[in-house]
View 1: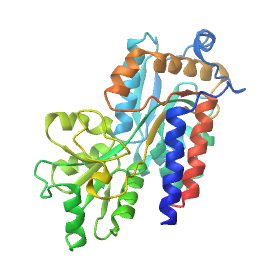
View 2: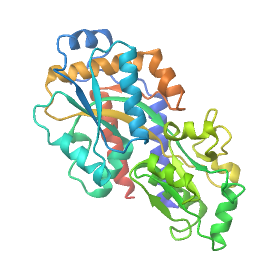
View 3: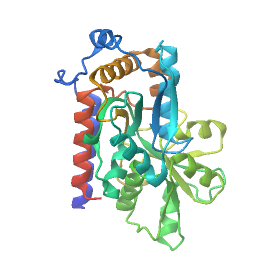
View 4: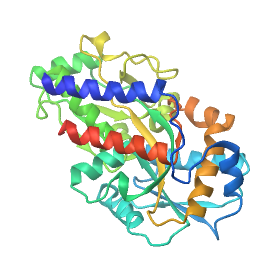
Length: 335
């Protein structure tokens, strides 16, 4: 019970910060904001295509986020070409190691989310938030459980009762925040990992494919990865792991308290980072184009609203400090 209280308190603080905190005063890092930052950045442009390293496989939430960023850069007039580089082996270790060890590279970014930070901590990696120069934080997402139309349980509450009676009920998902959500489900339901085992995949996209093949009873996912399947009718929202109902088309999912359990949540912030030795001019340029992105109505419509995300926007040092804080808080949980 004590661990659950600590978890709830820390995550509630993170959510409160993301929803209500005013932007911090600009730090000494070369990440000014707004028009001044954008004007500074125009003095430098990438020499060739910029590679964005994605730490999960195609079809997962990180991939969707990365491609949405690239698409909207084009819409708002960013005159730079981008390509996605998938380096998800070892749960993303190949990718995050490559970026952390790059020297004098101004043409590489990395899609970097809270799930990646969690994977670094859990794997004992020597790399973490301070191994990079954080460029931006562009959104945050809640997670939910989904089922296929063929699921044999009327609702997730019935699945919990079946598990307590001896039927193994499985949940698929990726690492990071998905796994935190699963662990919190076990906490509030009183189930063990033997009664409700977790099948971990390299990405949410892989977990959804497994669910569609009826190889797991439920799948945990972020809205960005599952909305298209909900709209097509291939997946049905089963329960939202948050304090309030998610927007349509995910609004049919009850929250945990409506099934007789304590509400839980595990928010997933999404951001982008650069190699630690990126030049000041290149870093300013990257901060500038991401400031343009999050200020644009296109980003609100094409990603934040489309995928039921929260507009958690931070640039440069402010984003670096926020990510570092959540990394330290996760380490303190001891999960």
